[in-house]
Structures are given as structure tokens and as C-alpha cells.
Length: 444
Image 1 (cartoon, rainbow, N blue to C red):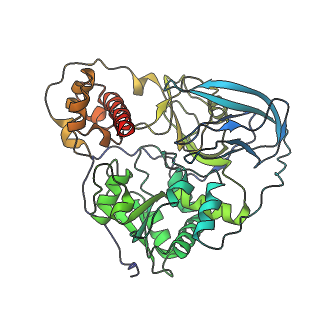
Image 2 (cartoon, one colour):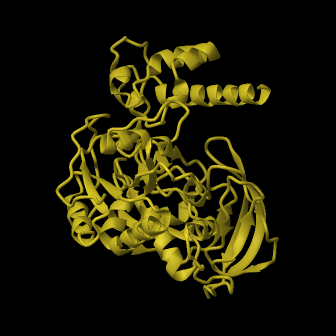
């Protein structure tokens, strides 16, 4: 059954309304010149860390495979430049993780690797294998290997959901993709529908992006399978379970997957990159990020090579004042960057720099039992109760409270008048509970 091109609109109201601050939305993408160096972490995805396939003094070409892991859940890593490998080093991420990284000095030639060629795709299985070899991961922030997500049982799936919500404040990377490359987005979706047998697709966009909604509706008018759904601009509209509920009225059971209820979900830029890869054979070596914040002199949507150091991006855009905090990603779910040598990675949509005026420290006070965190949680959890159970290391209570369902959206900390570190506590609780669940499955 085809998707009607009537003005589809969802009226579900999960989440909260927060300021959008998308001042860069109408700024066309600027391409950053070659950086002085490329730093490629071997962990830019959910799954096994890749191992370097090159060594110091090796020459590499743009698009050359330089990182690979013999594991099911992983995503190959490719050099974005031609040049010389100067070192293989350890790189420390702000969350405490240690990565292996390849450092490359560009030669300025951008010689393309001989292996770069459009893949031969004849059916869905060959499409999946092609995407697995492209380095494409979920580009909305999750970083799950796209080819692996596509390699699922789609027999019960009746809708290919495409996430164009981009609900995080400040970020406009996906919006610019919809405005600048709608043809690639629709081509990627069309190919996936053609070869997978899934009968329809819904592109889900928040109603604060009317130009993108109208553009994609107009361009998709000739394909009755593809609809564009207007969603309320409420955070976190882009979370997978939230968008599923708001777009289709369906819910996934605890421990389940979207495919269990007839849907599969991909980011809008991910769909575009699949189309580009099928045409050119160039793996994922660059992406657009939004560079913004009150410490940025020239906010912009910037196309950067993956592996470009944070410090070089800040220098290119300019600083109007000393930043007190630099965030990789958005303000709600991003991670504070401490090392300015740490680069842009595949799943990163933004780089924000804020002054002390916007991110000064707040004193934490006792919980006043206002229930704001409970009422605002899109997963209907009790963050304050989960925090208490985590501090007692009470795994049974964490299981009862379903801490593993947390999506890490940050709302609980955002609304808390006592400035409790709820997001961090619930995230740690979720990690602890999932680890215990894995142990239990292993014993079983």
C-alpha cells in the first residue's frame, strides 16, 4: 500500500519543548581546507575497535582502507587524505576510553585509492554487503554500523523510517543535508525500498523545518511509497522509540527491536551517504558538522574531513572569547572535549564552544521531590529513583526501575531545579545493569 502525499502530521506530545537556537540553519555549507594533520581513532562506531592496517612512514591514498576488525559488529575506517602516516598513537577520549589512532600528514594531492569504485549491487544482499564496506555508520549520533543494521530480518517490516527530526538544539547538519542534497536522500531511500521489499518509507521532520518538509514533499511527489511526516518540535523527537511512537503509534517491548513491530530506522544523512557511495564508491571520509556557540566568532555548517582535529576547526571558525567548554555533538547528548587534538569522528554532528556565561557551574542541592524528571522523561522512567538505586549498587532495583531503557537524552538533568547529575547517574546505572544482564545470559 502506498504512502499518501497528504500533509501527514503527528500530534503526539512526548518529550519537552526547549529552545532550538538553530541560528545556522539557513547558512549554506562551507568546505574546510585540508587540515595540517588527520587523526583517525580506530573506534568511531558501536562495536569492536578496528586495528590499524598501516604503519609509520607508510603512504596512504584518499579512500584507502586503514582500519579493520575481524568482528561482526564493527565498521571499517578509511583515510580521508593522501599522505604519510607519521605515527600510531594512543588517544584519550573525554569519557575515559583509550583509542588507538593513526596520524596522517596530508600531501595536498588528494590522490584517490585505486580500490575506490562504485560497488556492484544487484539485490538487497549485495546492497547490504556494499554498505558494510563503506564505513557508513548511524550519522545522527549513535554510530551503529549501518550495514549491520540493514542486515536484519525485514519480513515483518512495513515501514522504512527516516529520521530528519534533528531535535538537538544548535545543530543544523541534517537540515542542511535535506536542503542541499534532497535528491541523494530520496535516491538512497528509493534504492533501499526497491531492493528490500519494504513497501513504504516515512521521512520524519520536526515542524520547525518547514522548508525541508515542503522541499522533500515536492521532490517525493512522484513516488507514492515515500511520505513526509511533520512532527511536533519536542525534544527528544529523534530518539528511536520516541519517533516510532509518534510516527506510527507503535511501541517496542523492553529488550526488543524496532523490527519486532514492523519498522526500521535510519538517519536522513545516512540515507544520503548510501546514495553517494553507490554512485562514487568513495567510502565515508567526510561529514558536515555545525560549529556554533557564544564563543565562536563565525558560526557555520562546515564540511570537514573525518579526523580533523578540534583545535584546527576552532581556529578556522575563530573564537570571539575563551571557551569554558567545548562539546562534541549537541548540548544535550554531546561529550565535553578536553583534548583539542581529538578529532571529528563519523557520528559527530556538531562542535560547540561556550563561554563561562552559558556554562558556569551550578551548585547541586538536595532533591525537592518535584517529580519534574519523572514527568519529562520520554521513556517514563524515574531518574531520581534510579540514581538512588545506583548509588547503592542495587542491581535488582535498577532492573525493576528499567534503567536499561534510558536513551541518554539529558532531559532529567535539564529540568532538575536541584541540578542533580541525573543524566550521568542514570547512564552509569544503565551501563551497570546491561553488564549484569550480559553476565546472566552468559551463565545461562
